[in-house]
Length: 327
Image (cartoon, rainbow, N blue to C red):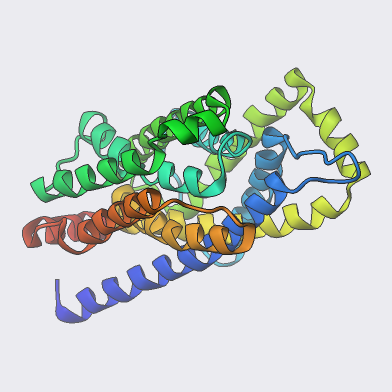
C-alpha cells in the first residue's frame, strides 16, 4: 500500500467515524426523549419498541434504495439471501431489545452496557467468522469488562432504593442485545469474506427483511393498533420519530460503509466510543446522575476502547486487513 493510499484510507475512516459520531449522538438524544418523556395529563410512556424500529427500518430502506439508484453504483449483489435473512433477524432483535431496555434502565446504563459490544463481536468473529485478533485486543476488552462491572454494580443502598426486578429485566435485555450484535457481526464477516458484500446492498436487504419480520410481529402482538391510538393522542411524537429515523438512516449508511471497508470490529469501536459523549449529553440534558464509581467505570470502558483503537492492531495485521478490505 502506497503512502497516498494509506492517507486516503485514514481520511475515509475519519469521515465515516465523524458521520457515525455526530448522527448517532443526536439519535441517542432523540431516543431518550421519545422513550422517557411522559405524555399528556396521564403521564403515558412510549412503550412501542416494535413500532419505533419498524418506522426506522422503513426510512432506512427508502434511503438505501435512493442511494443505490442515484449515488452508489455497486454492481450485482451475489450474497446469499439466507445471510441477509439471518443477519437482519439478529440486527433487529438487538435494536428491539436495546430500545425495550430503556423502560427499565436509564440511558447511560444502556450506553455503557452496550459498550461491551466488541466482546461478542470478537468471540463470535473467531468462532463463526474465522477471524484472529492481536493479543492486546483481549487486554483492552478486559478493561471494558471491568469498567462495565463497576458501572452496573449495585451496592446495598442502590438496591434498596430501586426495584431489583425491573433493573434485572433491563440488564437481561441488554445482554440479549449484545449477543445479537455479536451474531450480526459474525454473519457480516462471512458475507464480506464470501461475497464481498457492498454497503448499499447490505443496508437495503437487511432493512427489507427487518420490515417483513416486524410486520408479522406488529400484527401478531397487536402493537400496531395501540401505537396508532397513541400517535392520535400525541401527534407531536411523529416529528421526533421522523428526525430520529433520518438520523438512523444517515448514521446506518456510514456504519455499513465502515463495515464494508474496514470490518465490523473497527466499526463497533467507533460506535462505542461516541457513546461516551452520549452519556455526557444524557447526564446534562436529562439529569441522569452518575455516582463516582460509575464515572470510574465509564472512564475505564472508554479508555479500553481508545487504547484498542490506537494500539490493538499490530502493523502486520493492520496491513493484511487493509488489503482484505480493498480486495
